[in-house]
Image (tube, rainbow, N blue to C red; front, side, top):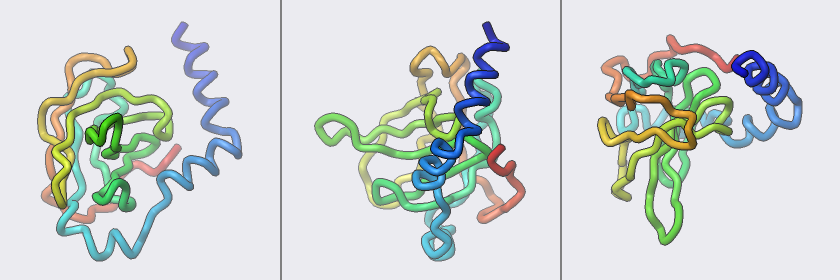
Length: 146
């Protein structure tokens, strides 16, 4: 039931321990942002069936050697999975629910792929999103974590 799921998510994300872990995972690295905004511009996610991941994501820190991005309680990161394979994920609820994934290329200055995103964990809904660089590099006009 949708109402019960929303209440469970609200309880989870409001716990102090959970927020502490999220801050540790997504905490802003102001120095990295300052020196890397041109290499890793903000990205815009649009067209996702899971509508609450659509929006402008700002660079927040370095993760896996490249930029990681946040929009509200959603994040985009590249991770190393089995056998060194690189995968991008768009996750919501402070990174606890992966919604979409796309294969990474493991190249310097890699950015989230424009296409090739696929729903995962029965959480991401069709259609899959399109991800593009935001022409307003460094824009702060984004939703803060709720």
